[in-house]
Image 1 (cartoon, rainbow, N blue to C red):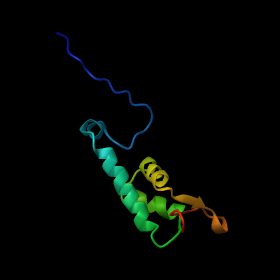
Image 2: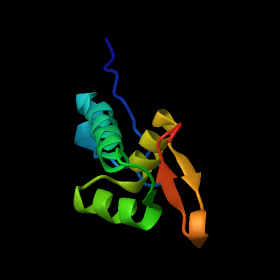
Image 3: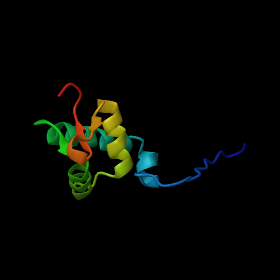
Image 4: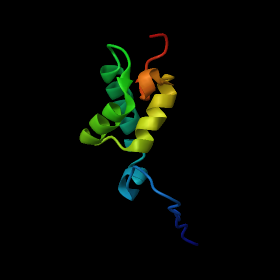
Length: 91
């Protein structure tokens, strides 16, 4: 009888720890929180990207998670007045 051991290769940076990965549900929770954050901050219209990134960092939302949530929600990047801003679809 042989024992099976798993191996995880960490390639690059991840926004979850090994413990989070092994628990199986933390990543989904983090993306959910990032989506809720984006819906909240963009509720009244476009917000400058640098403001969003700073506030996300203050809330402990990692960059990769934020960008994944942005993509999942279809948040659009616009550049009015020379500054990148994010806006929810159809706003």
